[in-house]
Length: 152
Image (cartoon, rainbow, N blue to C red; front, side):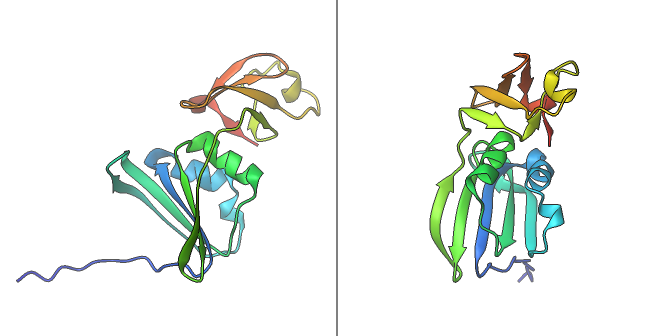
């Protein structure tokens, strides 16, 4: 009989689990949420098997609950992500992220001549494609797709 070793990740007492992140976008989610700058315990895994996505990533953040604007940030790089809110080791709420109609102050316009890149003007975008996430600048009307997004 084989001795099979299994590595398991501890459950979190209170906090948030972000699931169904595209594997290639794991570090974008970490960056966009500023998780590299917080003191909470964070566990993440990538290239995990997923029937729906093929490969996915997951992030567990102890003692962190996200506000609406933070959830909007997640939706930009992981539009199919699910958030599980954990209290006392139990899932008390499940939320799907949703790409909002408009985005403000999260993404930089990719047009170097745009007023938002040359003056103190907060970038604003209308979402023109929620599935593949592309944004139209409110000021210069340049379209920025997910591949070219730079996060503020």
